[in-house]
Length: 284
Image 1 (tube, rainbow, N blue to C red):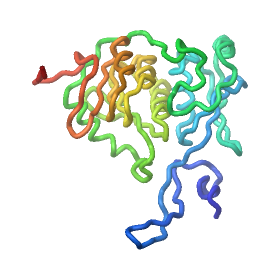
Image 2: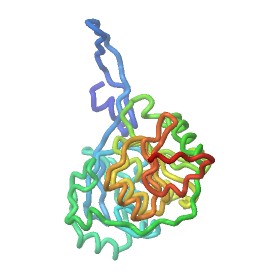
Image 3: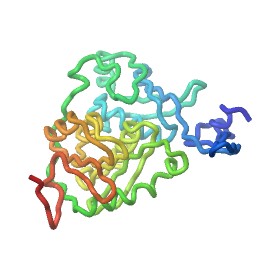
Image 4: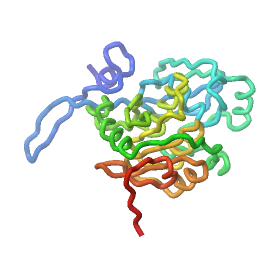
């Protein structure tokens, strides 16, 4: 079986991961083996028949990816303006045919007709700084999360990362209840993609976004805060570092931003009033 066939699987359909032949070296000793490798494919977003963007992504939960990306990138304002999302496999990758409200498509066509090659920066191909550094409306203020809920969610998340557990290559984005219970997780080779898939899942399920928070296994960049705020997620927890632009946007939109959430510790960069604790220490 050739490499392409092994990646695509027996039925020729993309799989989330595949066992590929490798040669492992320990000191001077070599061993032939198979190792699970995360799948990555080109995903083309086509709106009402017009190509818009190509993302490199994991070939799973793509309909949710289409919904989440379309809403968080402000191609539409609401989930209801997306009429359908259909995935179609092509020799070069996967096409997502997304039908949206005609007026929204006309607006999109005026903005940019073909955005190609978006990558990890999340901003490539934007036509202006105003488009790239947009500020969503302020989020609601009602959420309260117990101090222990953050620790509980961070500890529980690895058990939900099925593909990353065997490949070590995927990011995850989780939706967590206010007591720390992980309710949904989506994985992808791209951190933005994983978050868009999760948001698509929540919008499709009409989840109450005022009753939980998002947890991501990556850094907290500006784009991740932007995506959270754009759908009204009040709290974003990251296991890695934030950026200055992310902290500023979180403060401006009222999002509680937590980073370095690991090893039973975390740091709150904005919106600390949502964290309910029994004991607080102020560092001077």
